Image 1: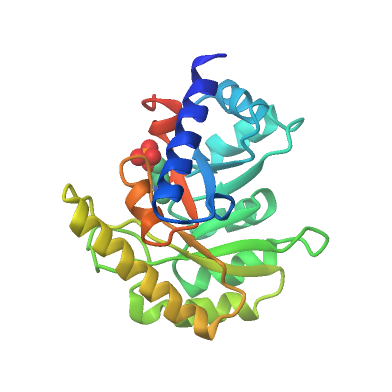
Image 2: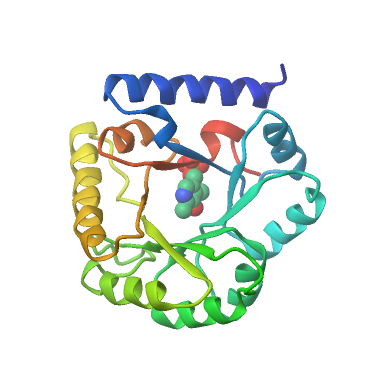
Length: 227
Ligand SMILES: *Cc1c(COP(=O)(O)O)cnc(C)c1O
């Protein structure tokens, strides 16, 4: 088995162990392989190993890889900052966009998504801890953005995505993830199509899973360091 295939196996075992420890049904936790700044060849190797969902944060880079991998049944998640002039290409080429954080983007994405395509799956990126340097809608404005997605044609409102502050202390980290989950559960009461809580990366996905994440986004922990 090649190196990346064995990394996937190790990661899946770690996810399984974490789910067992938290009494969580493992099939409910989806793994997004974050392939930004990784080669199309590595993506191919992982896809051949059964990994289906990949995350990218740069449009041009992603489009180039997509064109090299059209023969594979992969699904693409856009997880990066969205510039409004890129909405059209994002809506046309991705299956999910996890980083929607303002209403202006919602209209542009909805207009660009072709009616003959499946609806574009959308997560609202929430900056729950009001970190100045981070993208994401402020929690108090999340409902407005979610409502816009819910009522837009060709978009499917799926949930929220969050990147909590970097945190060394596991207890604090767990508490922050739980706060995000609480916020998500509250929002879900108003938006019944929501079923996705996207949180947890290479360094913290175990705590995220314990706190209720059902979509983790792992890059370096799977591919190794980025170029
Ligand atoms: C890069 C990135 C990840 C993956 O980070 P790793 O630490 O490499 O696992 C997850 N989510 C987002 C939004 C990212 O930009």
